[in-house]
Length: 104
Ligand SMILES: [Zn+2]
Image 1 (cartoon, rainbow, N blue to C red):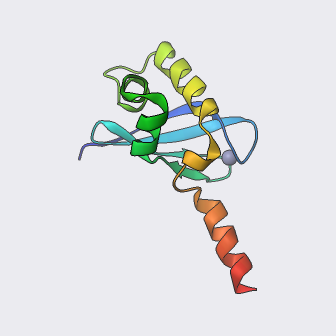
Image 2 (image 1 turned 180 degrees about the vertical axis):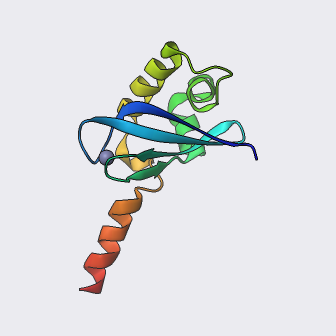
């Protein structure tokens, strides 16, 4: 399996503070990022990210590095904190909440 995970501390969009996140890589790219505190699962629309940030940055941050360095983690934190919410394709929990509102 070419599926791999790392954990790192990022600022959660839902918790509004720094929490541990699991980063799941599929192939060479980050597939999703999951907050270990609240379970918010975030995946990205790669095309939109590329349009917004350009290929160099997206590749540098979202491609699995050969070695997880402190520098890489810093880049990741900066990148993650600058992502506009609308670019996130699957704020899992929020979608579920919207669904449950509809049921009422
Ligand atoms: Zn969270």
